[in-house]
Length: 319
Image 1 (cartoon, rainbow, N blue to C red):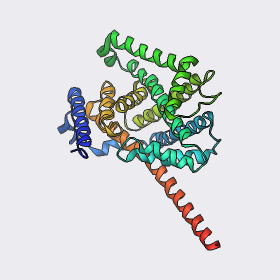
Image 2: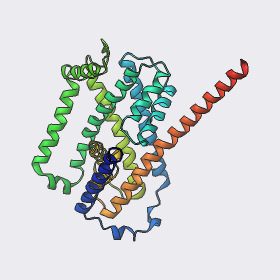
Image 3: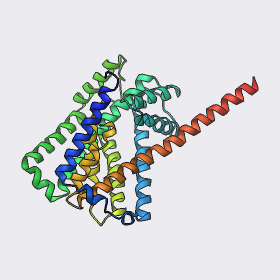
Image 4: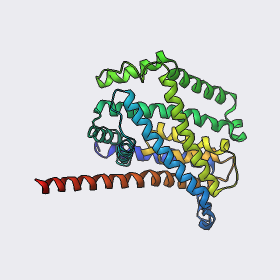
């Protein structure tokens, strides 16, 4: 029970919460089986565009991590090296446990001359700021559908605006942001940089960059939706993707937010499409994000291992 108990509890919570969300939405599982797969053929141009934009979002995330490494006192890594290290380390997200992505990033970055504390610090700080940026983008979902606005009322709107203002204050005001950065470096028992990340308007700069990053992700999802569905504005579709990600991330018991993210996405899309159609799109979105992240990372990892094997073989022959 000590070994298998926690995973079983996590799985149980995930199933219960996911079932509750879909039950509240009123998705008819029997009706899902009657849907015609032929109706879910994407429009090629829009679908390819969504894939290309999602790749751009992943590349943007990688380069932001590289810039954070530099601001934390690490070396200036070449763009290709930054992308390769970041994307290959992301394979750790698909291994059970929360530490493998960070551990892999620290290990791979160390081989490129980056201190482990700098690599992990950049990853964790970047992840935190990215989550705050996703909240800001996701709040836009409140203004995308009248039905959602009527459900939450004034109280939900005030709470959402308050959350946005709190995030902006904590990140943008240098005094608060420096304290957040200093707290992390105390935990890692390392010296914070004198200039860069924790000084000046660094918080505002990073928040803007990560908001743009999430804007790319949200736009990519909007194009994915348009490749399958009828015309809807970005405001009605894009922010829902960011909001669903945030809820799935906060639900720490669900691996990679599985089930929770899809359920919230269905809730947010239901005002503009049937619940069953929204469910199919949510599943497609999960496969879409996973494949476009996993395939390039796996190819990069295979190429990396192949080049190392070749170099080792050459060294042995020379000696």
